[in-house]
Image: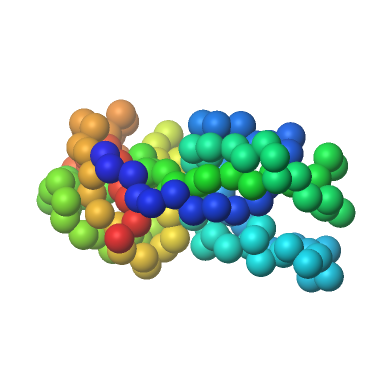
Length: 149
């Protein structure tokens, strides 16, 4: 799967390691008075990102992160999810909906993966195979990688 253009942001120095994935949750109230808050909060809330580079020479003081922050390069991470088999077509656009509310489903984390924003459109990347478990609603599902449009 192709990666998008890296974006520069700030993260806690203790978290700044190449390869680490995280979901950006949004700006904290403690960030409001900070002079570099826009550099920390330039990602889209709810999306999953992967650190591709760490700029160790760019440490900033921070009241949220012990040890300050470092500049990092990030790209949006593909998200592994289960979607309907008829929508699992490489390079097609799909609108992701959380259509199952069965709490006892063993595939719940794949049907409702972190980093997916309900109602947003995604591009089907690689098709990874069939669902690891039988769907409790009887649907035919495929395991795929999704990326933002």
